[in-house]
Image (cartoon, rainbow, N blue to C red; front, side, top):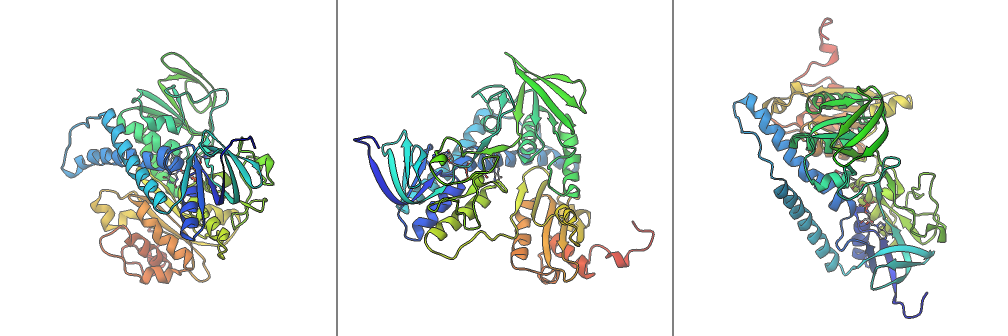
Length: 480
Ligand code: FAD
């Protein structure tokens, strides 16, 4: 330590104030611990609030309105072509973020948590140095590492502010609406932001290295989205690799290999959405006993404990499903363990939602996971063409499916594609966490007409008591 430096002691130091970090800090303070949180940003929220979940969903809500207005034509209501005011859109996004960030800052202050602006790096297993901060040195009893993740750039290119090769952060800045946009990566970030730009008027091409979109998601859930994207995007090329990109004055020149013609094309802008890597470098982990894997993810046990006694880690930096609600749960576990509570990360059904149009949501075991480990399961599918509510919404393309234990009907997984799946999936989460059987879901009365009835009827299919669809045993032999 350098003479004259300001040092401070704290019981719990939280490094990073995203949904993992601030949830940990808030929980620790509520459990009576003295907490300091450090982040380069001046308000809590992290990637999720400032450049992830919240800005993307703000734009996706408007995207849905645009697509819905267009669909209403078939139902007898026509709107004119939408008039897009980009400055107003950006300002709306800013107001949404500000409102939430101010709310979090106020919750933080009212809990008496000290929020320090700066970047922390471990100097030892119980001290950090904080750069660009009025307090430069902190000694802690416990630390919770929640530094999150950052977008992976395409090889030999980088993300310049205002450049034509954009990360999700650049895309969410919405500087303009490029005439021709290339999206690299068919994961949820590429699909969601591709849909936003397509709704705003870009001609979007998407390339994906794998032979499918949304790898890891059951393909029967992805098919309705793929059909819709075929209409919304100009081109989708699977099994296609981008070999090189060259950013020029007024375009980006891209060379491809795979199922795309021609092999060289130019675009006004490119969104690179090929994944994220953990922020575990340059934070002094070499001065601790914390262990990272070959990709840089911090190793933790089910109590979020790293290999260093005093240090815990949560959120994207530990890998797994890199989602905000996973980070939040882990943050709470770490805080509770530090406070001496018998807490552990013991989640059976981590939900995931893709906010495209249609949306896709799932939780618990997927059908593909069951098949991969040769676990016998019964899969019940309720197609939304049999749902009254879906019909009133002109959205018959959806599907609700349950993955069940054939022996006793225990619900192991749920997957849904269609409208508003974000709201529907929580019934599956609760069912799986409670160890519910198909009977529990079937006998819980679902209000009519709602999309939630599709969940009840999928469970009734297992029992042979569904109303709006014929059970297999009742289907005439020639009825496919
Ligand atoms: P982060 O939110 O990444 O926060 C980490 C914080 O640590 C940052 O503020 C960073 O500045 C700070 N930090 C880094 N290094 C240091 C240091 N040395 N010292 C101090 N502070 C440091 N998830 C969902 O669940 N739903 C969604 O709809 C969703 N949409 C997304 C859309 C996009 C475009 C993106 C990019 C992500 C989306 N995510 C979504 C993922 C979600 O944002 C992350 O899973 C979540 O933010 C992880 O939280 P975290 O607390 O681990 O880290």
